[in-house]
Image 1 (cartoon, rainbow, N blue to C red):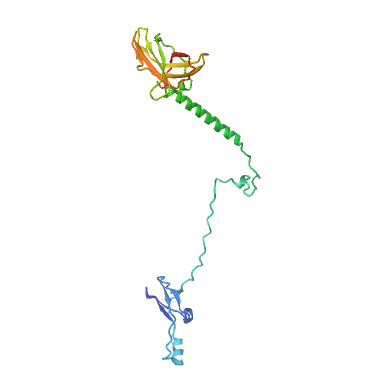
Image 2 (cartoon, helix red, strand yellow):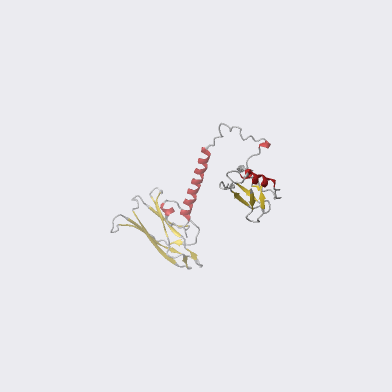
Length: 251
């Protein structure tokens, strides 16, 4: 059987048994072109005589290069799975056993220490908050709670005449009203602090108190300013009224 490459036209002489009855894929040894070669179709209508067959067999075969059969496809193998190594894990070469059992229990933490620390932080925060309220802009809060911030040193004086009276306002209840005058006896300008009013019973015990913010904070030499204030629902056992200069809240 003669095969001819369709690309480079190189011809080959191969036995029919090399192609087989089903045909096969062959490859040109010259240009490496591959194609499927079908088996040779026998013409049964015209059969050669035995003499022609013998004569054909005696003819020398051309020196055709042998056709190179197409190699069978190689069996593909799956790639081995990749193994990722975590360098952060302990190295078994250093004595670490990854299969060693863990301890049956872990040390138990003491929750009392955590709650003690939390209570301390909460108490300290409340203390800071209370101090901020008393010292940062809530005039009269400390006084209404009876928390005086102490008297301050000032050359200013209260005039001798001070008026104290109880009134009944139109809306009901009892109004305790006080009034007086602050004098600057010096020859220099003076700062006017808050005025604190303290109400005490006959035994000298503090019953109630509040603050009065003066209308002006600066008083000229030998000048004076008036003040007045009132508060509702003062207890009836008040017998003593005292006036003093106190450090300012939020001022």
